[in-house]
Image (cartoon, rainbow, N blue to C red):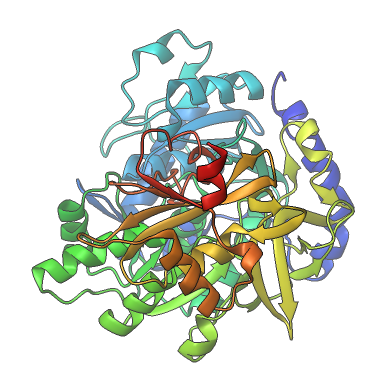
Length: 523
């Protein structure tokens, strides 16, 4: 891959097939867009971004973006030039991305947690010759065949001769973010500003967010959650975004309380640990509403946040490819919001069944990504205009329930077991703090169901206890686990706060376990 033309070829073809229809409907635009500049012109003195070190108003942020944009131009960045940006959750990373967009570069957004190996991979695969890596002191990147551009500081750098303005149509592919890559090489997901703006508008409408809110961003800025909240929703609402770059219960709680953040959208487990710290201090949490999503969502965390802390909890479903596709609505009763993954948001379409799997959830709409950077990744990603999510879904009366990942379906004696369904039932058992079901190869049944468990201090649980509780919950016999593996520490999470289910089997060696009688006799 030698640069932007090859990098975005598939995405540009897909955008061309959809452009006329989506422009006519008003979803996409042939005009440039710069929500940050708009917010700065209307609300210059409102706080825009904050991290642990500093706070910038919209006017201050806008000025730094101009200075950094000029630095990019001075370094040779031109329209459609790919620029790798290594982002953390800090003000400098926001400046870097906004500056690259303002000069019409193609943004290749890599999480700082990807490390030097991940950054080099993005550089090689994209052919990019420019990089921004604010607050990264990585000696290994000094030898990379690219030019590193620094983020400007106030009073530093050459001011543009004229006001920098983007000239690129909003619906032109220009933004690449990378999947977490927990099971394979990360995929480059291509969006336009139109697809991301549409997803952000749906997010705002469903969540009930407004200018009076303050967004607490704990998900990586380089994730789809971080992109929407930190780069689009904040400026669209002229609302402040609070960036947390390093998790620790005490420091993170200090930042949340000091900022008075009212909104959280991110991993449920990190929210739970944050609420633990709030409860320990005996203070009132400023959060008023939260978005939680994912097939491994812990129902007890959902109920705790709402019942004990008065926080409105909305479940949402989406991915890097189809962000914020379904959601519970803020005004809905709790019983409805907590029961499924919500209703379809504006102009989102869903169907159950693909060419490869009759229960697979497929999604289309003007918020959908435009393809992957590598054409091989595109081969099985779409059925026509429908993106194949890889999730098993149930749809009834316009509401969606995600049962689990197809790859997280355990097939025991030919019968399918959704790991997420087992998770939800096990988490309701007294004494269970965390759990995750997963498959283990089995010579007799093909696969068997195992569950990794973290128990509350002093709690004890046998396989018979679990089987009894799940039977009472209505699960059939074939969905009962045959193996429990007890963890003394929290289960491993990826950068997006999801349990790394695919690694649990290999990490089970040496841990205390309980197994079904047939497995004891087999050994």
